[in-house]
Image (cartoon, rainbow, N blue to C red; front, top):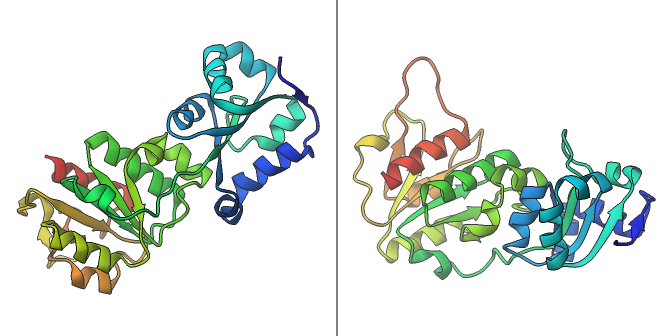
Amino acid sequence: MHELITSKTNEKIKQAVRVRDSAKARREEGLFFAEGARLCVDAAGSTPVKTLFYTEKAAQKYGAELTLLAEKSEEAFLVSGAAAERLNDTFSPQGIFCVCKTLDKSVNIDIIYRNSKLIALENIQDPANLGAVIRTAEALGVGGAVLCGCCDVYNPKAQRAAMGSLLRLPIVTVDDLPAALTQLAERGFTTLSSTPDASAQDITQTDLGEKTVCVIGNEGNGVTEATMNCCQKRVRVPMRGRAESLNAAMAAAIIMWELMR
């Protein structure tokens, strides 16, 4: 039996909540927060777990998962209902929480250029969109992602939407997307910019090439002018009806399907 934490003001609980709620704390401490049996197990398979918290009810329902998590955690604590309530960040909490160590996503772009099909995300601000795009990318077999100006990949909402894909898919973050795209073009990549503009090429009719990277832009403003101007082609998802644009995650899913088709 692990040590029981009953107070929601316990220092371990306070640290977990701080990491859960603050991007600054996640950056400074090199930690992120995960909740739920499946996500915590996925996280433990990709990165070290610093602290595990679980309720008695969770121990009865998720015994196998907790046994695995406890083996992989530096420390583990049983928590009371009050303490668990402080940690809860979902509508249907399962009573399992982990504080994990972040992975370095700021490495050289060499980590992904060997893959033939990539997605680039520019200024995506909705964590749910970011997680959904990366989850879809992994599911479709996209080789990796380049992120620039996006929300924190370790935001709990992004992690839940990605269900572990943000930890498994090769991802690099860059400060200058046009420079990164130029570097990829020099290595034989066809660089595409997505846009709803009617003058762009229909993605379903475009020669995508053997090695391709496509940029998906901000939910409201799309791809920046500087990034669009450095891309070799502009592509759009053909639409019928009166809709002028698609949700960023939906547009990304269609484009990635075409990349991998």
